[in-house]
Length: 592
Image 1 (cartoon, rainbow, N blue to C red):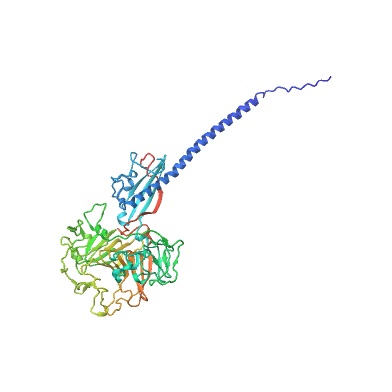
Image 2 (cartoon, rainbow, N blue to C red):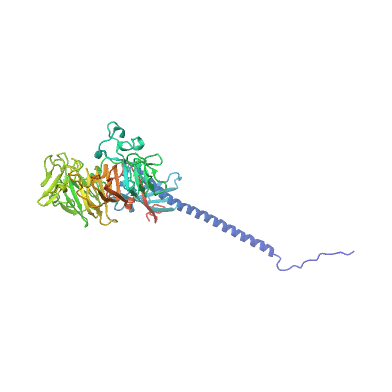
């Protein structure tokens, strides 16, 4: 029997190698697991850090939004801030007392406001720079958001949304009743004929209420808004067009007679569109306050100049202006009742202002020039008794005035030795002897707003010397007129071609209109570089007479305004620019 034995393998020196290999692999796996845990933990920390970093920026934006909401409730909230904040240096700000605002905190002990619905993880602070508000209407806000250990900061420029956001703005798309006469009672919401209906409130269409339409030669080169219903026939609108009319298509393809006409052209898709009503202020009296010397630096940091009665202003290219204002006695007032006043040299000496040659002074930089009616209250420092006239001044029986001595002559209506060149006033009350009218023209250099308690007459070209630096506002409580004189025979005195106005124009209670727009032949183009806002539409052309429109929007008005220019009675603040900067505060609140 043959037996087969299994052969034994010889034993060598690597007997424990397998065990060592197993142990080594285990150690490597353990190290890998440890590294994986570390990487995972660090990744989680980095993810949280990244999330906090992104959330901090969102918290800063939330601060901007929250500040805007406060301004929407109280448009004077720009006065508040923390004077200890570095960003507010040079600004006139105070902390609000009721209610307090935790977002105005500074330093490590200062407070932060909490972002809603963030479980108190996201917070913000903001600082206010209002140093430019009185001149350009601009507020700068620096907001810092904090989440965990991350902080981020943005700086935003805010401006009130107002009339100068539009090349053309109107409250009503009808002619001014003060110019054409009060129309039928059906045009009004009340039997006393005090409040005009908007078209979408059932106002009769066509000539009954003196409606006006944009014509085929009209091109609007900028944003347009009306609180009424827009009428357009073959017109061209190159910018956004909005209306308070809620009925699509938000305009009417009808002429002034109510007749169907050629469709207008709207260059931008999505327009016309509906937006809310922007109510006009009742008067421009708020601007007169800017000439008071008794108010705090927060309200009126630098008073402007006040003139009384008919006033002529000719702007000169060197940044000066010549002012003739025969009724003026004080150029600033010291209280609301105007029982005290002063005569600063910056507004011109009274002797020069009341002379036939006038006072030549520097344009009040970043300020207001206000022309008021001659006061009827005897305690007013600018009072002149009825029937009493200044030196060299003559009242021509409610139809005009003269200021003249020898060969130096001023006044309206324009008078000359010849009847062909002597102006006939459009109405007996056009040039009131005691009215707060201002007559302006010239080459404007500077930044100012000219306001009148009554009319503004643009009596010649009014041009910027530098269209990037210079900025002008014209705010008439009543109409703003483009002077276009005619004589007693019904012929135009001035037949020169074209007129140019560089300004933001606002007629608070009436209209922007050309005088004698239906007289004579074409005067060429009326060029307005700026913005036009008015309560009622004004006519600048009829048939071949008057001016064709050449209106161009001053895009600077998107982020700045003429000094202290009026805004709607209710408005919001919009962000014009914003940029992220280095964080202003660390997570512990310390300034960086």
